[in-house]
Length: 227
Image (cartoon, rainbow, N blue to C red; front, top):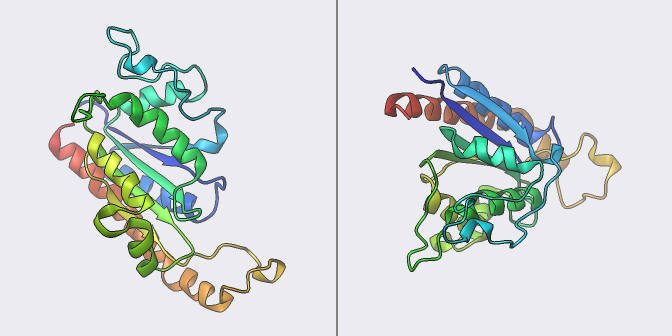
């Protein structure tokens, strides 16, 4: 049996906090199925967003359907594109994924979108996908403003493009997260530190378990589908 591999893309600048912990739990779930998992921290890489060179759209060009820009991301994009699954993980900043995650998505997805009348996708593989979000807000605000009616919000739009290129992503969330190690040191009066601590102690472990189960489910799905 060919080795199966899932990549978890961490769009957080921190490697040991909420988003990173969710990534780790997801990876552990994947590995429990015998499927390989690798976490890639985007902030470790030197790369930019799309440079509008359009080499990926050049008719008959050697880079049609793939990003040609030579930086740290080029090899990562190739590995991810030919893997079996991908999870996009990000803290939510101003209602959206981080800037580095947006830059990564531009470079990963844009080459696979053709400019025909249907924007027909041409990825080399139709990958299983997941999205992992961590955020300060509650679930109600997330659904209403960030996903939006008919996926009209910024994260709804984000997921629509993933679904257009790959398979529809499974969504895993951690709400009302504990942001600082010591709230007394920061101007953050809008938050109730005791409520945040309670959420961290009682609910975040459940969020981590949900991430684990999502990773395990993706691993089994890939194995069972023979992909």
